[in-house]
Length: 614
Image 1 (cartoon, rainbow, N blue to C red):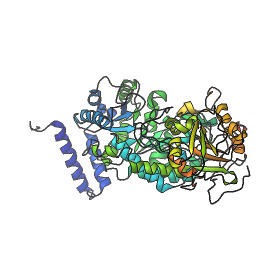
Image 2 (cartoon, rainbow, N blue to C red):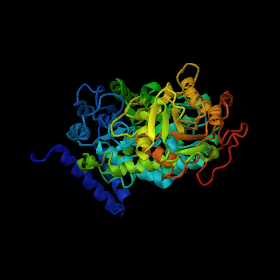
Image 3 (spheres, helix red, strand yellow):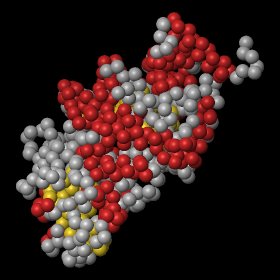
Image 4 (tube, one colour):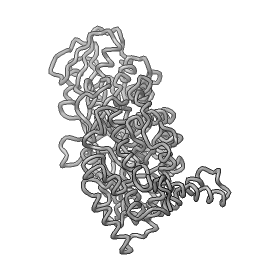
């Protein structure tokens, strides 16, 4: 009989604790943290109904997907995602309060199992206005600096926690084989060794000691082959052999598992003719059993309904993004599948154990709420200083004819050209404030033009679209590049008229107009991948691959004017021509059939300025 003064859930949790203690004593491992967590997981699992278990496997948004917030309790939801759509609040405290209210709903249930809160923080807390936005991973790959990448991840974790989250869907550890793929910038490099090092550093920085309030659970994604699809098609077929997959694509995941990454996200692509979401051999057998991964395997968007429902669960996916009306379909469908022996209860138990294990590792049962003291750190000067350092180290100098760089601070007149020069949205790319990015300035960011104006006393004129004739300028700094995109919208194919392997005609004219009129021309390329810019490099005096630098555009000016030297090295081979991509894959470091314009690892410095050979 339960005493009337004690709520049922506290009575049950007391039993859980007592059983865990007894099990710990029995196994003589009471003081082993991992064993204690396993005992708690087993004990809690034994108390759960099937509805509660399926609820833990369900992930919903904090809006729209639920008839009311009460669904958190009545459907026993295990995790909440913030993505495209309404913000949780007007400021960081509002975001925290929203998630606190949802957490209270979860804690009001019979067993009081806390929620996980997840977000795609792929280059800083990129969903929050005023956060520090770092260079995308391709830029971090150019730094080749694992210490810096770890520090970037640590800051990202703080700002993610400060806005109420304890789980991020990063880092992307894909190996891109083709610049036509619209997610190249989310990955560190075409090089497996470099990607593996960076993946490890990023995960260690994000997770640290998971019990700390300033760390978050990381996610290695997307398992596996997403960057190596034929012709760079998002969600397409990856026709590599299993030997190639093992040798070229699997090492970053092995490093992630060794670093105790909390989650792995399944990929949209198919491999050996099987959708990865339903690939039991690779998810269950390879990742979980052979590699010893004991964390959560999560689906990508609508993975349950998109890839065959029961096959997805049986393959080893543990948490389903049950979004856009899929919640009822998922929960009822899985319950019926268990009743009809189409999905075993053992598979359900494995999934729930993995979810509970991570919640105990995050110490959510003791500390379920976000830490409001972290709010003041969002976009702090120290964080922005580190982001500016990352920008500086990411820049790759491809050409420096007659040592035009570094630029003199004593120049009389400088013309800055291009809309990318004065737009933080354009310089940051996709996954910045919105899924597909934005094309306007956002709070707290510094543009490239801002940085140039702050570093020199020269007259600075801004010729946004090269419609003016400032041919008396000492130098033209021309900032060109891609417009923001993410996922399939950034793929380059016949139906996508905006994204190309080359610069737009207007941006090409920005360069030729000033170069042909005798003005020394320094080109800064803002892009999420190497582009075919052979002609533009030839006519310019200096050419810099600046990738997608994020919120601290002044880091570019600091290097252009010589306060710091160039340090970046190409994380990808640089293509010569569009024809290099006519076949299945483009130019990359392991394909010797095509000669790139610049090899992987190329990058000049002020101290080492090779003669202009290109």
